[in-house]
Length: 361
Image (cartoon, rainbow, N blue to C red):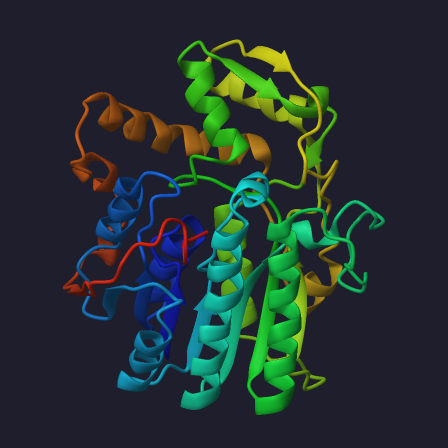
C-alpha cells in the first residue's frame, strides 16, 4: 500500500512511519520541520528512520495548497494519515492564528487533495481535548463534545466535522483518532513528562498546576501505533464512511503519581511549585476504549512505569547529546532497528517555515 504520513517527523508520525515500513508499505513522510520545539530532534527522527527504498521524506507545509495537491497527484496514495498539526492546548491561547492556519487550513488542504485524487481512506489525528470539561467520565465517542475550552480543542473538533462532511460528499472513508496523552521515547519536549524530566534532573523546580489535582490517561506510543495500524487494516462491518475512536489506555493517572514515577526512575526528588489551574486545561482525561477494543481486538498494554522506563533509556542518550552542545544527532540514531536502515530517497522541498504552521504531533 502507498501511504502518506503528514507530520512524519513528529513524535507519533515517526513511530508510525517506522512501523508501516516494517510492515512492507511504501511510505512518504511530509513535515515542515517547524521550530515549535527543537527542529534538531525532528531531523534526528527522520535520520533514525534510516535508508529505506520504500521511504521518501518531503519538506512541505500543508498550507501550501498547490504543492500538497501536486504531491498527491505525482503518485496517488491509497492511504493518508494526517498527523500534522500545531499541538499544545496552552500555546494555542497565545498563538490563535497559527493554530487556525495549521489545524484548519492545513487539514482542508489534505481533504481537498483526498477528494481530487481518489484516496480510499483518510486517517487523521483528533484529540481527547475535544471533550472539554462537561463530559462524563470515562469519555465516550457518543458524547456530543460541544464544549471545548481551548482553541486547540476547537480546531480538532472542527477537523472531525470537516472530515465527516467530506467523507459524506465525496465517498472516501475517514477515521478520526482521539489520542489521549501520548508519551514515550522520541517524544515532544513540551509534554509534562518530558519537561518535568528536564527540570528535575537539573535540580530545577517544576510547576504543578492545580496543585496536582489533575489526572491524565497516559498512553504509551507503542500502544498508539498498534491501535492505529489495526484500525488501518480493519473495515467496519456496518459500512460507515466516517467514524471517530478514542485511542487511550483507559486508566487515568494523577499528576502527582506521574511525578513519583519520574522520581523513582531518575533517582531524584522533585522540587514542586504548586500553582493554580491553567486557562484551557481540563481536570481529567479518561478514555472509554470499549468500542475500539471490540473492533480491533486490542487493548493498550504498557503501564506508566514500563513506559517511563523505556523513555528514560532513550532520554539519557538524548540528554547526553544536548550537553555536548552539538546538533550532530548521530548518537540519538544509533541503536534503532536495523531493519529500518535501507536506501532512503529524500526530497527536501524548499518552503517557508511560517512560525508554527503545519507542525507535527
